[in-house]
Length: 520
Image 1 (cartoon, helix red, strand yellow):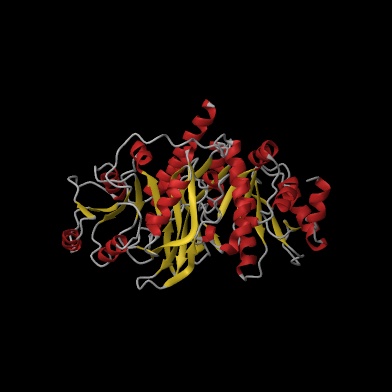
Image 2 (tube, rainbow, N blue to C red):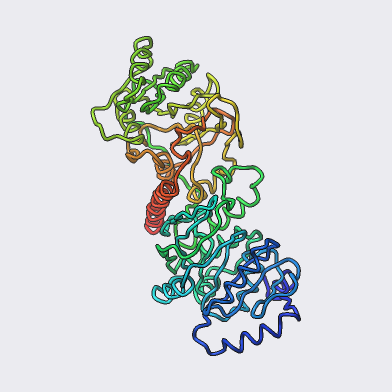
């Protein structure tokens, strides 16, 4: 986009009421080493807005504050300037404000954040940026909920932290040099939406500059800030935003050499023999209230091929073992497996089943608290595996509560997946769906991580690196959401640990894809 087009879309207008004060502010800062930061924030009618401006202007390091608003917000204090635009991080606004900033650093305040700077907060952020040469610096923070202040740590940034909802907190300090060089190297900001604009900017900066996490609580913000929902990326209402975010992520993967062209390996001919065509695999520990329903859902599957059910009972201490013993005594289709090892997690239980002599040619998922949506699910999954050159097939599921009543957002079908770009976009999102069915031979060549969170995501990414994944968009599965889910009612520390682990999975996968591309 030409410079004139930027100005026509987002023309800078300096209010006459603030021009004199702004010039006076610049005169005071001119040649003064302390004036390192330009603050950028979106205008809001909320009462805390004026207080926000006041505390930034009182900070010695702040040269000026740029206030972004669709219309002139009226009288602003000295050293504040109005910039016409919908949001600070849309592409047009970013490109224009970067032309105006002369300070070494830009401090972005995330929209809707009512926060209070801690003592020396900006000095600390700037000092770390000076020392590290980072492109972006962010920190832990306190949050206030119901009048109580609590710590809110955030995660270190990794190469695999490319999901757009990565939590930087309310303040992010960008190096002006890093931003200018990154946009020059990788292209100007083009995002239409603010969320995609910030995402695009920090990914471009991250290609050649570190994103540095200060493990100190440098400010306090009010809790209750709306966060991205667990299933936002599959909400039909977010389709256009998600496609924009996918385009940003895909371009980033191309920049760092981790993008995979839609060229897939052919499945090798079968070299193993199997007792049945398919096995339904159910890892379980202490699910006495749901395991019988899950097993019956598997037993009632109607298929025109032989199949069995492998339940790996991970040393349950409630009534689960007794229930399974009774069910196995009534059915030759069900095998109740109790591992010898005492240190298995969900992924380890999957390996126990997949590498057993009882496993069929295809291994099909059923969690111990979920149900198949009909008796024909197994048939449909296996037929899809047989029809295509697929190492894995993923269906769609409906979220239900403990009483199997549908709850929002209902059907999760992952229609954001495309055959051409699904395995690239998979690095941006946190999951690929359910139920999952695999080629057992492929699984035996990889194995699951012995963890109880992210093991399915990890193996799907590794499979997608080489092979095509098939999709079924009809509802096949009822997924219960309740207090026993691994991602239910998480503390901040637990959420951070889970997020960091999936970022690690993505980091390793990105490295593997970069290496694979370099060998080509």
